[in-house]
Length: 96
Image 1 (cartoon, rainbow, N blue to C red):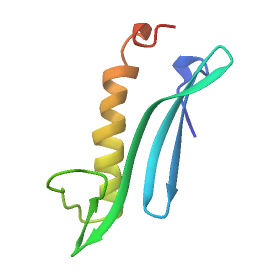
Image 2 (spheres, rainbow, N blue to C red; image 1 turned 90 degrees about the vertical axis):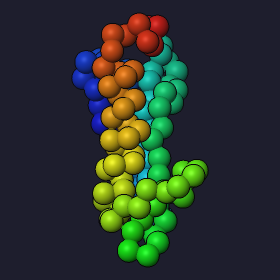
Image 3 (cartoon, rainbow, N blue to C red; image 1 turned 30 degrees about the vertical axis):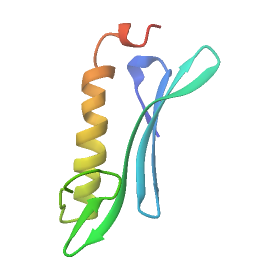
């Protein structure tokens, strides 16, 4: 689990990996309720000497390793982009 200290315990991220399906799920707490506010996911598919995301439409980016697929697809492309655009901004996004 990842915690974001500046959110005073209101936001947590969980990393899951099972049978080729990897994801980062971000939860937010409002009063006594928890809700998913972001999901980054990849379903890895092995091809000739590369891996692709089976969830993506159109031409698939061919990535040389599972680790590189996870980092580029789940972390950099989805999670980090969301984090920088939404979570790193002032809290007006969440309407606390």
